[in-house]
Length: 268
Ligand code: COA
Image 1 (spheres, protein in one colour):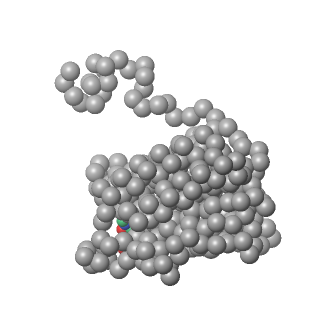
Image 2: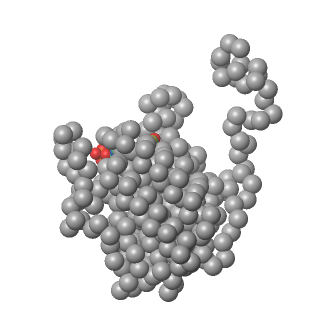
């Protein structure tokens, strides 16, 4: 019965996710599609741009407190981050920081669904991610920054680094978190290393449940709007600490330099 009543968060688009997280009737979008701020690089590569560049920045209240929700649109180029979308995210984080510095309570949520840096805007995407990481670190010194990974794509590449910098990370079963996506692993290391069409394998290795068990997320929720919203409010009111990582750090600090080089197939 509960399953039948669940309203999927993952099936929603970025705008609907932001609307679902903010208190009803408080949603106000910054640089919405009517502003027509889109990527100038895509058309030349034969790709149709989108008027919000795949990033929704919305302000309003969340649990009655001023809030900013930043949501990436996994349906547009895999939610990838280019110059414009990246600047919107970094700018929204910067604005939250200014609020926090002035002593205004501000709740900032990143609802991410992204294949990482946009391949069509590679270097600009890298710069944007650096700015986003910088802005998250500065903001979380003042107030919690909450990431929600509960979409169809998951979070990959540079944005997985940004996620790891957030103070709270909420995941659902359908989420995926990884630095290199399965497509990249298969291309670079071969199909024996990872078959990107083997979805059960992908979720066993980098799925939401797995990442939560490994200590990469602070909360694991059902794919249900009410459950995600409740987890987000909880993250601000009763923040959870990330536990120790189940996976050993790499390179293993116990390895001496010679054994490390040997393990990497490099002659010392
Ligand atoms: N830049 C541009 N486009 C991207 C992208 C990126 N970083 N990541 C995904 N996309 C696009 C795909 O090309 C695809 O486009 P298409 O529909 O025109 O073919 C679309 O997003 C959906 O991706 P798809 O691979 O069909 O969906 P999936 O659910 O099977 O897998 C990923 C999604 C993200 C797991 C997979 O695309 C992947 O492994 N991407 C690489 C992620 C990565 O390593 N990023 C590091 C970059 S820094």
